[in-house]
Image 1 (cartoon, rainbow, N blue to C red):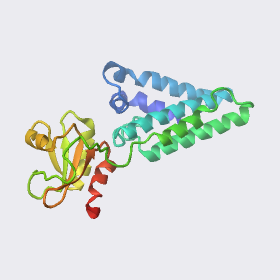
Image 2 (cartoon, rainbow, N blue to C red):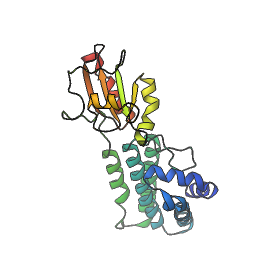
Image 3 (cartoon, helix red, strand yellow):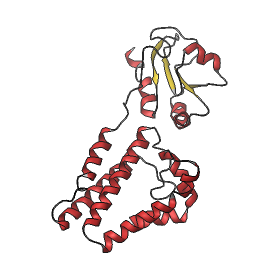
Image 4 (tube, rainbow, N blue to C red):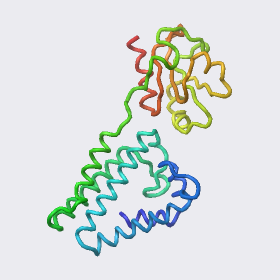
Length: 240
């Protein structure tokens, strides 16, 4: 597995640089990130194959760190972005993170089985698993009473608008939400071209969603960083 991952990074350095943006790297560090990661993965592969049992524990700790990075990317709404783990088409989805957790746990168990007493880094994969499970964004929109239009107020955004998504061209999360907004038949209001709508809704920043009834009454609102949070705004309709 480590050799395959290293091979992908060596074969397509550009894809690895693009995937680095998913984890917050850009510029020169992103362009050269393939080198240390390919070297690390190749070294771990050699250690697991030919090294002492403790090498499996080191591999488990590294996999645990990889899983934390995947969890952070998911929490930031980048689950559809490339992660570069096994090629350009892979993304840090929850099933992929679960597989990383399984690999980390397996490596830790094998290392402990053959290494005798657990070294200081043995708990790392387990702690990483717990942290990755806990670090999740709330499933509902992030709503604050002082932000956006008041609930129950009337908001004129156009005939037939039931869900409004306020976006900005410079917002990466906004671009990731657009396919889901299209599926939900949301009206999209850009910060630059729809400044009047932004002002009327008192939008604090993008991405922000507002649900309206047929008369234009505000039913729900909030900052939406993920597709699930955007969908949660729609889910109030049957109850209001």
